[in-house]
Image (cartoon, rainbow, N blue to C red; front, side, top):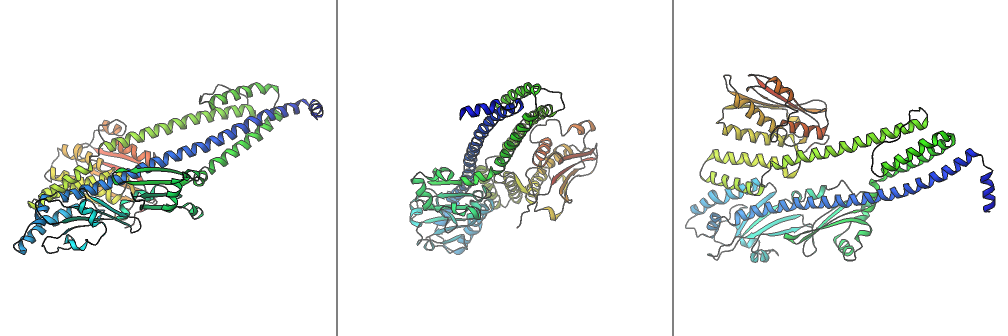
Length: 575
């Protein structure tokens, strides 16, 4: 048989011999390389998915931990309040004294806590002291003595979490400690369950499961976001625990496990391998099309080529090997206009574009991280700040100091919308609320020396935008415009907002000192200190594209107008 094959090969025409040898030597590496890269791509997707799951779970847990800590801070603010302790343990001679405690101490403190923490639905103190019930603020202890958690809360020295995925309930309870009296007082918070776990429900669009179990392996939170075709991958807590104990969960799922040590909770985030494979289908299809196209080009090229093109092909092959190793440099050139010359030129263009794309993506990510870091640096410790503002507001109300109370509320609104629970998008309504709070603070600091006009269309309030865009513009208008006004008359700050077919257009105007033409030409290109207009302009272009951003118009001693243009978001917020 081998003799017949040898004779057949010897009798082939020389061109066919070259075709056969080149095809054989070309197909084997292509198939081998294709198989290798196919496996590498699958491994890359699995590795990336593991990293994404780990990052998503850590971010979600951090967000949950942050929220729980704020609830604990609010609880401790009430539990360790001496005025509240004194009020719920005192013996009252008449109803008027009891009324004063309710009106001057209890209601302001509880209302302020709920105002600062909008997730809190209800705060109630349950007491066995001989006092009259007061709405939902003060109730008799007998109302909760039948609950299973009452005994554990009564014996605990720290706030206790009472959470149930089945009941969709999230509650915090703590004993109000007082060694000098024999009364028992329990502070209870009912918190919106959906808001607490909001970040957990939006980790992916579909095809993922997340379960948080308490120390008794009871579900605290559970979500199964699977498409109809993948609903069989949804797990109950018993199925999940069984697979974990048998160490077989990783056979069908990519999963991550994390411990929430302060509460003895365990979180499991998992996605089926089929979902990961589905996400790479487009890449796999493209890969096979490219391989098949390469084989076809190889066959046609070898059939029509001669020895004069062998050398350029060898050089091209070597150059491809260099690119495969990561050296994105073109070393082969060909000025011919035939197929080989065209192929070499296209290869050079591809490597050049690949270099450009890598650099652009890399630089874009670095730039985005720098701007996000600058925004993060502007944040302060929200636990300390909100508690401080709460105390200031309470003291101001008690002292009948309305200006101080307003300032505390403006600051609370400003920093709550600025921090935005760690999100970088916000509704136009909340962005205006943030900016308005900042303006009111500035007006109080400036003894109301300037006026403010707001002309924003109501129809645009529910659209979404990235946060912290308008406040820096207002800050510049006040600090660099109105504060330096030398012409007669009162300073005027104007904010307007309107919409076109596909854009939102905001304008911030002042009648201050204006900007000199030389500085106006470079205001969006020169580096500025702090979180300035240049950073706002770049954030807008990074998020929406180079056709959006800021533009300036100014006349010296007449004023300045800055225009912010952003696209309309397709999804609107509904009340």
